[in-house]
Amino acid sequence: MREAYQSDLRHIVDDLLDMADLVGTALEAATTSLLEGDLGLAERVIAADTHIDERQVELDTKAVELLARQAPVAGDLRLLVAALRMSSSLERMGDLCAHVALVARRTHPELAVPARHREQIARMSELGGAALREAAQVIADRDLALAAQVEKDDEELDDLMLEVSREISRGEGYTNGQVVDLTLLIRFYERIGDHAVSLVRRVGFLVTGDSLDTLNERVDVSEF
Image (tube, rainbow, N blue to C red; front, side, top):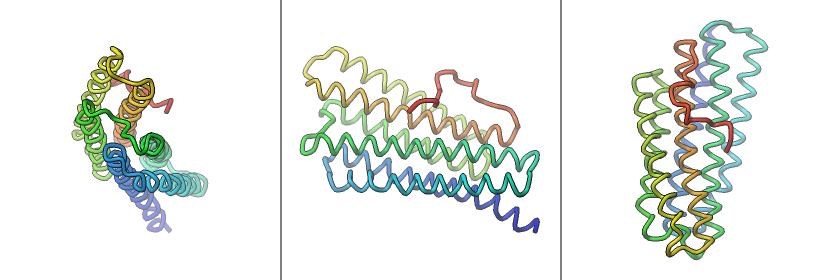
């Protein structure tokens, strides 16, 4: 009976890692659809978001059932509580990838990102993907030292968001639609980074029992 319980706990972690892999694939595809104007790829990202949502429901159901049946304490309890929060962050990251793809679909056949900002958007996506991969490794290995790299990636993401925001605020050479789309896009990518930070902080809670949310007050994933 105890072996089955421990196996269920391991499956919870495996499910989180599977969700992270799905989100990483969605992020890469959404950015490609955005920068290359690939409508078919954008449609696939949008459709695949339902699968990420379903995985969250499945994971949360398993976690709640274990909480009810096993009445876990100490580290096991922290794992299940953290898993419920992490699955929510991963689901929101999937939603944000779908939002990027929706912008690509809405502007097709035109590209939503002007040439002058392609490199910045590509870098934001790259940083978000790196932060997600590192967060997944932190979840798998409980490596709190690696969590610092996720914070570093998020800081660069924030800096890029501010850089693009300053450029478009001047309003020179942009259509109204481009201003709206770029403002949304940089926010979507920035929030992906924030959710990656939230993931590693949940692992910090899991390992130490202490909340790490006060490390960086700029990170607040209560919206988006």
